Length: 129
Ligand SMILES: Nc1ncnc2c1ncn2[C@@H]1O[C@H](COP(=O)(O)OP(=O)(O)O)[C@@H](O)[C@H]1O
Ligand SMILES: [Mg+2]
Image (cartoon, rainbow, N blue to C red; front, side, top):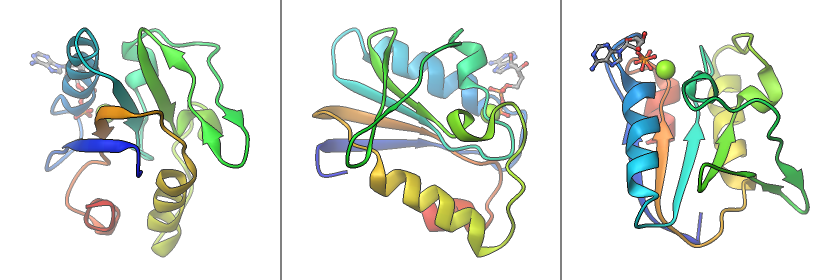
């Protein structure tokens, strides 16, 4: 995270309220003028890959994880690991998985990292904050 100047976490009290649409469109608009990363951390239902039409992108592993560039932004998602299934994790495992992904992802110099957050105000949301 040391290369990330600002973080914008797009959060909301529940699912289906527009978090992923806002996170995706915000990332695309800001990418016109700034260096942007988008990280889909909604382990219950990652969907920014569908919104942005991302199919075959994969991260590269090299002493950490290097996100692929898609539509002019660095794109990272738990969908690379969970596919289109919700991640079957509970309790501290959820927070640990999300925090580990944040810790091992190597961003280039970013003006803004936009996070599509898990729904609600759960342990996962609070631990990410
Ligand atoms: N501002 C909006 N007006 C109308 N429909 C919207 C708006 N934002 C999102 N939607 C629709 O609502 C549904 C849920 O949006 P999504 O961004 O996936 O929510 P979340 O990520 O909070 O679960 C989607 O079908 C999306 O197209
Ligand atoms: Mg969503």
